[in-house]
Image (cartoon, rainbow, N blue to C red; front, side, top):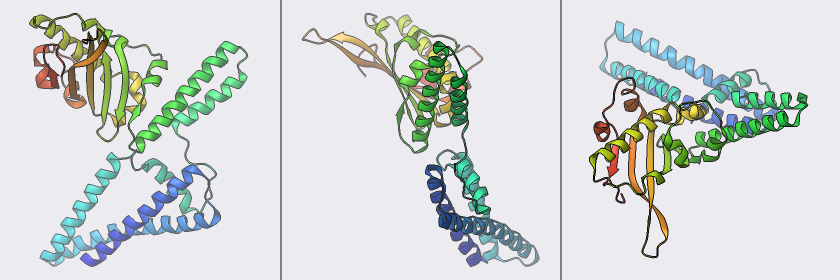
Length: 310
């Protein structure tokens, strides 16, 4: 039965690849009549293949109970392993695999339906509602505010789409335009750039900490104050509502802190004097209890040389 399982597995992967291709086409434009027929056949074959895979596993298990066979045992264990592994992989990579859109497309394809528009996301639905409301508003001030909100929502949608494609994006402009009621921190005023790397699942923040230009870190107390500020900022950043739409692409935070000095030509230059990286899971475990700033190097990867370039 190993051969039958292998054939069905190859069929499932092949059909899935075809359905993903048609999904991407469907997102960009309506399918033609011919494409709808082909994708409908693919969808039905894919569903039948999944059912057949399940039936083969059940039959193999029943055969193992009745007649023990080493070859059947290995076939069953390998099949169960692949089933569990790829199920977990697909569920944990919903955005990268455009899983939600693919499921919606398969539902339409099973009915051989020529859908004129792909599934409307929450962001797109909000944008549509904003546009409808903007037409009914009479005051120019309200109209301008709504248009600004629409632009921000469209910018967020565009960046989320880029992230889903594995592209590193900058959300600096979006960050500056979003107004939220949230706990403030001195470091927020010194944010120069914010980027998200979806491949590394990393939020990268560059801070120009001019408040530390003249501070000497020979005194350990100043170093501990800096560590306290860095820790508090990372905690607040991990829960910041402005990152709500991007959280699925963030698993760790990386800070690059710079301060300024003068070169031999008396020109003011910025140089990195502290780098800190931390995993969100480990950071959140410390929230709710007192954190000793001396333990920051144990929690996060720290590069710091008493204020010298790192």
